[in-house]
Length: 84
Image (tube, rainbow, N blue to C red):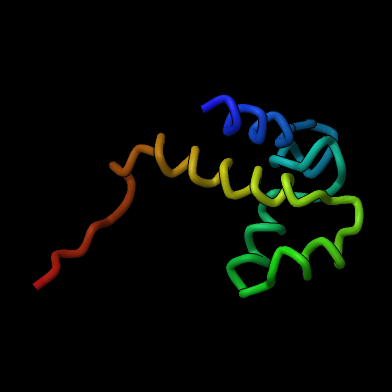
């Protein structure tokens, strides 16, 4: 639990950067971009090479942030299809 909180501290929001979208440690690197790279199959090493200012813990922080959002989301707006 403490480790997750430590990771989440790496995610910041600054209204002056990307209209307040979540970023990593105040840098101009959006959490969204890192998650998109992971979604596309990029490895941690590839992301770190593309963004040399990032640390492995920053990538873990992005995943922890996404998990935190999903764990606390309200699904009332999501359309659920019946499985047959």
